[in-house]
Image (cartoon, rainbow, N blue to C red; front, side):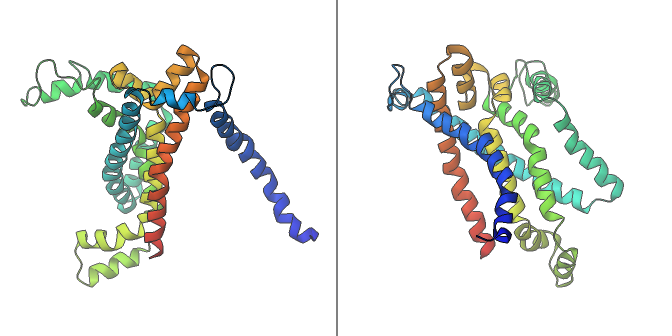
Length: 276
């Protein structure tokens, strides 16, 4: 191999080494720990324990379901918001960008405690809905899946919006003008021009939001409480409470597999439609 042909490999070596030490080795260690049995042997005992009763499968099902719902909510809100930011003028776009980015500069714990005040009994939401006859005296969304979806959607909305915005800004504005000149209305232009061209950003934003949603534990634990556990929270309890690291690694492996089952086909479908 000539020195010229080795140069790209040498330039990639630091990045590859960083990825191996930061991602590959920790994941491999978790996978190995998942098969470590209490007696010190190697076997599937932890996985048998995981499916011995219906508790952990139900927790896994709730985790994936909430992740999908949160992704859909952020997509429904984030895509129009990204388009609005793209079409807004200089000052309006700057203000919208600040409003979107500002929550990212606040601790997720502080934001979640804010939602506890809003969603709790006698909170802001109850005070707004009660005079309208839409809520009873003891109305509360605490310890409900709806409350988790609301809080998590607000936390993850910037990731969807900014990802889609980056995709929309690359669309040539002349394409929209051509569609409008050809007789297409605003809705038809969005459907047949903007959304297909922004598809990669929507797919990327959805994958990012879903991955963050299923792996979050602070907001689901505080809003959902012990009545609505998710896998990330169960893993945290195993590590900090019972100190059963092997079983926690088994749950982490299950979470990784479930996330890949959803993410990989969705990403492949997005690439296939983009190539069509």
